[in-house]
Image (cartoon, rainbow, N blue to C red):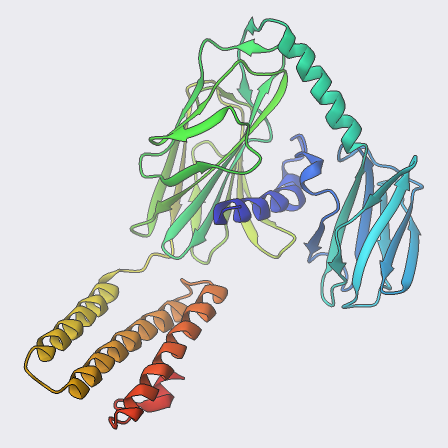
Length: 413
């Protein structure tokens, strides 16, 4: 699974528990995506775990169902309410747990999870997924055996655009729900061609997309005929901001039943679009907040225009200056190595040049951390790698009798 796939999966979970709560008119996503998974829920009391039991689809709740949560050697039991939800408030915090329930002889079991010490968790157990999948395969096989009919498709209510920030890049996800409302396969007269923004970088389909979808030369192509129901396609790409404002323009080759755009809330960022009827701040289960724009249906061939301003852009001037200094230092080292100095002096100069380059990189990284343009995990990993290399170089300089010029261990720390 690629990095974009992983971040897309996390966003899909956010959609289900955050964004979908605002856009209530939408159909819910495929329940198999979250079946048995424990999803953080900051809105629940500390240490609380809820387990919801449904049949085949989210919303088809199963009240009166016994649910067990095993933590270590202890088993806790609760019964689902009218919403199909069993609540556990007194589980041992920090313990390793598994939730299970039995529906008409079918055992439903969650993935292992850790009882939280702060905030809560939501778990959904879905009964009948295997039967529903088999029934769908049979229906698709029957439909495939009959010739397609002429018709059209639309982008359904669950279609949306999501935007997150990473350094000076924007990660954009199109979650497309292509709907054929006819009972038979539909031939729309050719493939559904979706032109991605010209500045899109690294565009690709993501895990869970229909095999009929491909991306090439900045264009998403979904070949038909289209089966009755929903064809799911997810596409991810990156955009370079290049300034404090960016406009995302997209032409929709089929009718769009609803405009939904979610943009990660970052301090100072503003989102506007002539297609929005309203905007809301929507917190997700992991604490991330999205600016969610909603708008009415659009006909085929319409264009959505979303403007993001106040972006966390940082000039590359300092980076280029540091890079130039590093190149100059390396060049000086190369020149000195040709002046006939002893082997020991050459080795020392090479170490000094490498040390100076690493110190420059460390300074750049600290500047990014203070500006908030690097995520904590990436910062910690990169900083540790640089510090380890600096310690090695200082050790070799000491062995060569050079001493830790320019700061010693204190600089590396």
